[in-house]
Amino acid sequence: MQIAIAGASGRMGKTLIEAILNHPGCELAGAFDQTGSPSIGRDAGDFMGISSGVLVTDNTDSALANADVLIDFTRPEGTLHHLALCEKHAVKAVIGTTGFEPKQLEALKKASKKVAMVWSPNMAVGVNATFKLLEVAAKILSQGYDIEVIEAHHSKKVDAPSGTALRMGEVLAKGLGVDLQDVGVFAREGITGERKAGTIGFSTIRGGDIVGDHTVLFAGIGERIEITHKSSSRMTYAQGSIRAAQFLIGHEKGLFDMQDVLGLKTLF
Image 1 (spheres, helix red, strand yellow):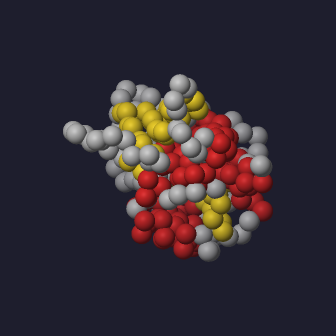
Image 2: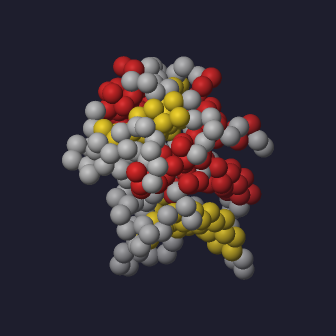
Image 3: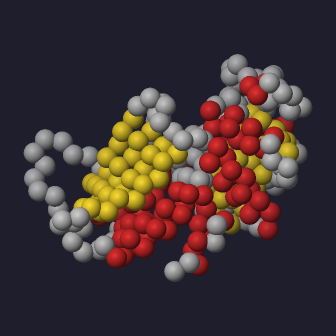
């Protein structure tokens, strides 16, 4: 399977390149980044001290020309531009980008009518297993428990709450039979008054090089239940992305997520 990487100079881009170069079923078809990146013109494997035979370019068209799948963990505007080129070159897409605005999400969904894609705020297999656990827990603990989603990421992350935290909130709200937009509390400051029953609170931490920690707290009377996932390496996201790319082999168009990739939607 021939895979192209967007944002090849970034931390996630480099992790994806490493995973692909070490995967027996994958080949690096292209690697691209923004004009002005110091990596432009250099071998994509330079940071590993090896030659991949693929140069990092700022020409997205050429990077996608021989690819079967694009893996993109960039920014919403860039991802949507890349999807238009995927349509042009008949390239499928694995999207790990977060921070989409509602109109951008609609554009992504529209693109999926012509391009097969997997879009998920978190590609890690363990995180997606956690989503399923949260769905079950929310149904069991729907009465008498206050729910908080606490997430922590590195200081360079630009969106908050994280896409994973928001997806957790959506899963929890679905389990409770409500809409997250109606019950989500995303900020607290000053005299807030007592907590309103049935709400889902969010807390955000940014600092250092934290890859990604997420905890959902169910606080009841006399007990607390915590479901936590901690990432110590971006490689978990890369391995999940490759699994998603392999899933797309059997699809020509449509929008899927990691729950589809892992077959979790058919479990209890």
